[in-house]
Length: 266
Image 1 (cartoon, rainbow, N blue to C red):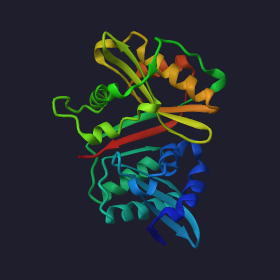
Image 2 (cartoon, rainbow, N blue to C red):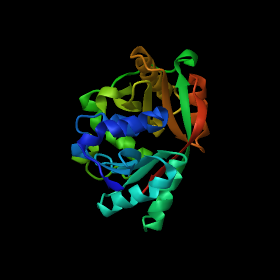
Image 3 (cartoon, helix red, strand yellow):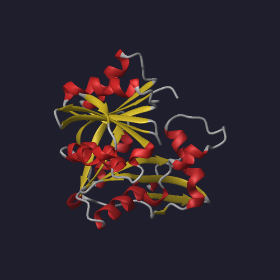
């Protein structure tokens, strides 16, 4: 049986996600949010009363993920499409990413671009901080961080910044390095689970690259996560981005798997 899930299913979703905690951080963080069932939509496949797989659409970002039994992924993807959710991206670890993207293609939804990435992990005991001193982001940094996000996703910076773009910036978990009044680099803890922090949006303004600014942001973010008691920090970086991989390796990150970000027409 496949059906849309409600707040009454929250614990079942989390129980399923926590079986593979490290791979399901985006799902866990958003489902543990108080606004989970007002902002997001969830679809589940059941065997009797047992939840076998879940798909989640996150309205704030337009992102779509799925996890659980591979054989059940197509049916829950179809349920989401039948519900008319607007998918902007699929950010998922393998093999789930390929299963989702393949089913979306079969239903006529073709990604405009796919970023093949590596899944990296940093454990507390091998952390080697370095780089420039970073500070926590402040409210006055919000628009600058929106523009950096646009650069990351190859979107124009000439159009007015929208309320939705501003809402997607998580200031309380972001660190920045500033130079000459400009935000030169940033890194954000996107979501947290019981044991992990997932980093998103590690960006350096092109004018300030190769100065250790991204390393400083990452060092501050990782140090804070370990102070909070996390076992490890994870992130994703494009397979072709060898400069970022070298930075992360110097901090102590190692490759543990593959990740795909598929972006769809907005």
